[in-house]
Amino acid sequence: MDDNAPLFDPHSGETAYQQAWTYMTELALELEKRAGIPLEEWSKLSMVDVGLRLTSGIEIVNPNPQQIYYRVTDRAALLLVQQATYSVDAFEAARKVVAANVWNSAPLPIKLRAFAVGMLNGTVPRPKQQGGGNTNLFVRWQIYSGCKTAHEMFGLPLVRKDHEPEESAADLMANLASEFDHPFKFNTVRDWLKHKNYTVFRKRCDAATDYMRDKYLFDLGVKRQRP
Image (cartoon, rainbow, N blue to C red; front, top):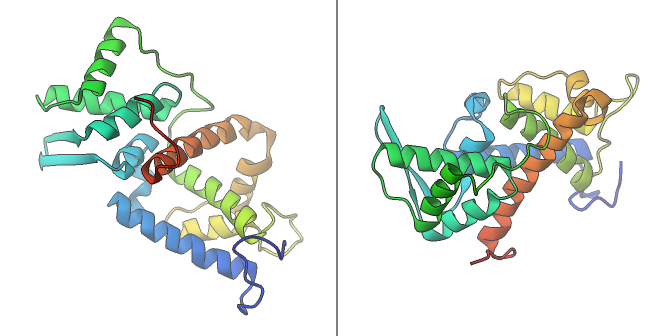
C-alpha cells in the first residue's frame, strides 16, 4: 500500500481498503443518479447508452413505449461528431441518434445531419475497434476502471497472491459489484487486469475510459471543441 496515494488519509482511522470502498460506493450511486438506471440493471446498458445518458445537451425523449428519439443541442452534436472520428463508442452513439430521429421525424442539428450524409456516401468511416466487442462491457468496464482508480488514488495493490490478505483493488471491486447484484469472483477480475488472454479486453476498456473522460473534459471546458 502507498501511504502517499492522493486520496488515502492515514489519519482517518480507516484502512485504505475501507476508504476506497466508501469512495467507490459513492461514485457508483452518483452515476446511478445521473444515468437514471438502477445499479442492479446496469448489465442491460451498453457504453453507447451510458454515453448518451451522461452527455450534457442530449435528452432522451420517450413519449410512449414504442417511440424514442433524442433532443440534441448544437454543442452536444459537435462534440459527438468530433468524438466519432476516433471513438467507436461515439460513432455508434451518433449513429443511434441519427437513426432514432430520422425514424421518428425528429430534428437533427446540422452536424449530425452532415454525419448522416457522410455515413451514407462513405466519407465518414467507422473508427477501428480497439479491443473486443460490447457484450456486457459497461459493468465490466466499471469494475476494471474502478480497480485502476482504487490502485492509483488509494494505493491498493491491483491484485494479490492467493495467500495474501483480500485487500487488493480486484477484491474491492469484485465485492462491491456483488453488493449490487453483479457477481464477479476475485480470480475473474484479477485475470482482466493481468492475464495475457485479456489484453484485447484491456484495450477495449481503456478506449471506453478515453471516450468518457473526453466527455467530462469537454463539459468542464478543459478540452476545447474544434469548430
